[in-house]
Image: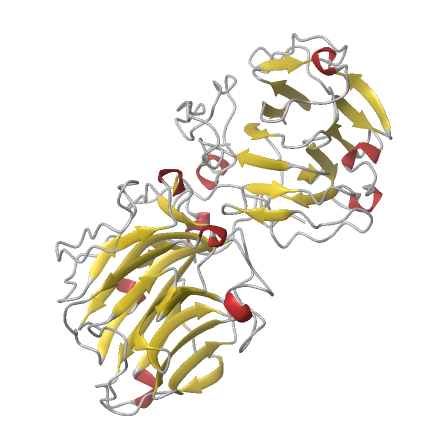
Length: 498
């Protein structure tokens, strides 16, 4: 089960193939690296009134996230664990799993709390989140507000509003954190992508200040914020990969970055959403789904005893030519594809290679395998295994129903030769597969070792390679090898181009 098909993109800017306010980069937070943006303010701002806005694409979803399974933090601040505020995606340790929780605590007790009924379980989607505090408002329900993709949230499992003129411990002369619960001890590190991070001190603004509906659609897209920020306000957009916390608001409220590397500046943004591995994929019955994912769902590690598979967040589009790259980490890992509905045929013992030729197939050991047999072996790897770290290339010509597979820029042919050429359309590895007439699920399949995937947004393969800067036919992406003529990256901007 992929999240995004060729014809359907989720609401929010994930669906924006063009944008009047394009966003060029995001910051990837990999929770295993303890990533954080932090600042200790020298003085308090307007504690009663503020607005936090950001675009977010989740990677880790579900149970077992954050210290004590308490969830993954977007923004936090306060002097101690009895007096603080937090905006957090909850896990299974407290509250409602995958809800958004906007709350603050005073003297060890939660004083105000909004927990959404809406659950945030889509690893393919960019969400726009706006949280507003305004305890000066005479109407209780206006004192805390949450907006998601331009719409005000009105359904909550917990709904407790502050008293009139209450003073939360957000926006005080204490340490604050983006992507981390930065109160006393850093914890609950965010896992996913953040973009366009605004904090407005002294202003209670709704979502329309940061976004708008695309004309004649219900798709929410970003727009440039043109207002003031106040004393402690900031705007972080990640444009400087050596200084992710640089404040672009003009207020000079820079945040210090830790646990973030230059390769965590990503091309995956609210205005051009790229494919990743689907962290909630779980619809094949025979092989496991136990790939361990990291690095914004672009790193996959197998368990080592059986094959595990996960689909991508995009199905293969029904037309066009599509290209991506990955590095194989173990001796048996590989890529596969399967017609939607045939996933139960995939076996734990040999992954997609067990599929019949009409159902799909997979790369395994040293060649193309389906029906449990090697239909094509790659001469350079006849001794049995791939070399760990080699960059593998997938090029699928849907228009002509051909599949090409390259290793270190040498494309393998069906006769075990090395003269495949996706640019000229000659000598594919698999010819005349029914790509254009079926829903095709693209698979990461791993037995052991670690794969690094690049759909155009991850040119360094999570910091393991030196980016080469090759883009596709539309000038999109950062690929290691030159993209074959006419082929495109799997991203929302390109889905509108075919």
